[in-house]
Image (cartoon, rainbow over all chains, first blue to last red; front, side, top):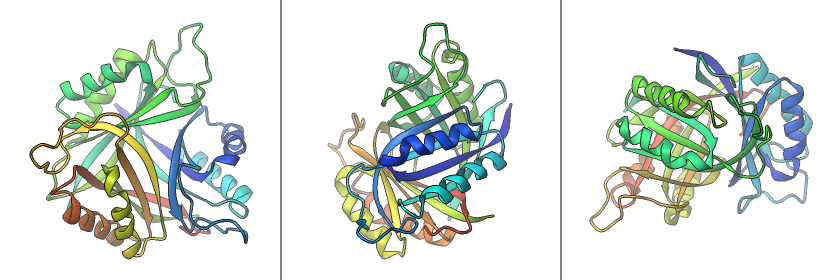
Length: 104
Length: 104
Length: 104
């Protein structure tokens, strides 16, 4: 009763949420979920002067369910290429199973 | 040292959190985790008049670890059947590994 | 374009976040993400007098991406051994895929 789908997870700075959302939608995903997140990390390349430690909940985690692994990977690649030189961030994919009868 | 378990993830409207929690407990799960979530989505069937865009953190993401894939799927099916005609929502399953020595 | 990595997820009480973060860093992880979480659960062994129901967002979910399954499991085991006798908590592992060109 389930079928395989993919999830792409993007953790990055809150200030680029709108731009990341535009990429997600432009690549055909029909929705995404956003969480306030904190943490600490060596995430991508940080320009000099940007703090290495991210405190409080100044980050966001964005999760997108996609029908195919290919779409999930396209989103991850596009977000990383566009933003992770200038903003801290990581992105990764997971396998998920969706109920066959439901849209996403 | 680990064994396979399942995770069911439910993203839906905050107003039905209590009812979803009751379903989770009635199907034998011993606990769940709740996150405030925002986002945007074509999630399930929305009745006319309900906004298509979900702003702020008016959604919740509920995660439940279950011993078997069967229990995870039962929870997903029951929640979708009961609520996703009238409330926006998606649900999906993931495989996880739990430490053998720990309850969940 | 992706390679396999692991994710360890720890859900526990907010009061031990700093101590959990120290374990994560001491075992070689370069970053982690933290979310405010609520929920309800039979999570680990609770000492008498500790409430069984966790309300509001007094919990945290900590997620760590690691290059190997071994490191993820070490973190899970160390956190469980150190804290889950005295604090409620669960920990589990997931498989993820990271873009080859990106650090984590």
